Image: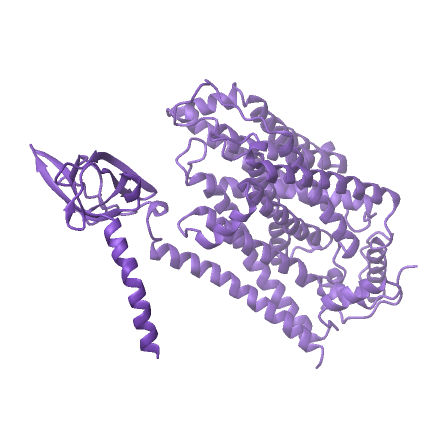
Length: 453
Length: 174
C-alpha cells in the first residue's frame, strides 16, 4: 500500500484515490484462514450464549444469580457498558465532522459502526434481563410515560435509528463506487446497486448528501447525550445509595465518552492490523484518539473522586456502608480493579512519551475497556447489596453470576465482534469518497477503472 | 322482525337476571362513629332480607393494589363493621375509596360493593408543588408535552434526512 504523501497535485490525488479504492475493494475479498478461524470461534461462543439463553427461557430467571435483592445483574452491567461505548461513534464522527477535522476520515466509519453494533447488542440485554421476552411488549402497550424505563426505550430506539442513518448516508457514494467496480460477485453488485440510491455524483446529489450528513451530525449529538443521561436516570431516579446523585447524568456521559474512545481505538488497531490499513490509519490518528481518551480519562477520574469523597466526608447513614464495601469490603477487588486498570494505569501509560506508541495506546485502550466494565459492575451490584429492608436469614448479600449469565455475556461480546467482522467484509471500513473533500472542492464521481483480481 | 328478535332475547334474559338477583346479595357501605371511634359499616341483604353469618373483607384502594382494612361477620340484621384506620391518606379530594367483598360462604363470593367515603379523619394528601410523577395515576401534561416535542423533533430531522435520500435517488434521473 502507498503511504500518504504531502503532494496534493491533481494527478497525485487521483492516484491516491485509485489506490485507496483498490485497497478497500481488496478488504472485501475472500477471507483468509485466520479470518475464518476467528469467525468460527466467535460463532461458537455466540451459539453457546444462545444455548444458555434457551436454558434461561426454559427455567426462568432462576437460572441466574438474580434474586429479590439483586433485581439487576450482569445483563444490566453489559447493557450500560455497550450503551457507553456507543457514544464513540457520535462523538468522534459527528463532532469531528462539524468541526471539519480532516484527520477523522479514516476512522469515522469504524466509529459510526461501533455505535450501531453496540446498540444492537445493548437493546436485547434489557429483554434478556426481563426473563420473559414477551413482557417487552407490555412496555410498549402498558408503559407509563412517567417511568424512566420507557424514556430509555424511546431514546434507545431513536438513537439506534439515527445511528443507522448516520452510518448509511455518508456511505452512499462509496456504495456507488463498489456498484461500478468490475469483478465483484453478483450478490454484492445487487446489494451495492440497491443501497447506492442511483448515486452518480451530480452536484445536486452531492448538495443533498452534504445537507443530510450535516443534519445528522447535529441531531445525533443531543440524542447520544440523551441516551446516556436517561440510562443514568434509570439509577439516579431511585432513592438508593450510590445511585441517587445529581451528577449521575454527566457522570455517565463522560464515562461513555471515555469507554467509547477506548473501544474505537481497540477496533481501529485490530482492523488496521488485520486489514493492513497502516497506510491510511496512521500512528498519528491513534495518538490523536489517545489524547482524547486521556482527557476523558482525567475528566472521569474527577467524577469518580467527586462521587466518593462526598459520601465519605458526609458519612451519610445509607452511603457509608456502601462506600466501606467498595473501599475495603466485599467489592474492593472490583472497585480497586476499576481504579487501577480503568483509570490509573491508562493515564500513566498515555502521559509518558514511550506509552504514546501503538502498543502503549492499545494496552491503555484495552485496560480502559476492562476497567469501565468493572465500573459498570460496581455501579449496579454493590448498591443492590445494600438494601434498606432488613435481611432475611443472612448477614451479607452477595451476587455471583452463574454460568448462564457469563455465557450470555460472552455471547453478547461475540455477537458484537461478529457483526463488526461481517460489516468489514461487506462494506469498506474507510470512507473512499471523502478523501479529497478537504483538499479541494468535491470531486466529480468517476467509475473505478478496475476491480480486484 | 328485528323487534321480535329483541323481545325474544329480553324474555329469555329475564329469568337469568332474576336468578342473578336472587343469588347475589346487595351490600351498602357507610361510616358511623361508635364510642368516639369511626367505623366502616356494611349492610348485606338478599332479596330485601338481612343476611347473617356472611364474612366480609373491607379494603382501601391504593395506587398499587388494595389494603386490607379488616374482616367481620354479619349479625342477624345483616350488618358488619371494621374500625376505620386513622391517619390513612385519601385521594386528592379527601375521599377514601373502599370496597367490601364476601369471603364466605362460597356461593356469595362474587358479591362486592365499592364506595367513596369521606369521613373527617381521612387525611387529605398535601399538595405537592412537584409531585412524584412515577406514582401519579396520569403523567403530567408538561412531561408528556416535553417528551413528545423532543422525540418528535428528532424524528422529524430523521424524516428530513430520509427525504434527502429519496431526493438523491430521484436526482439520478435528471
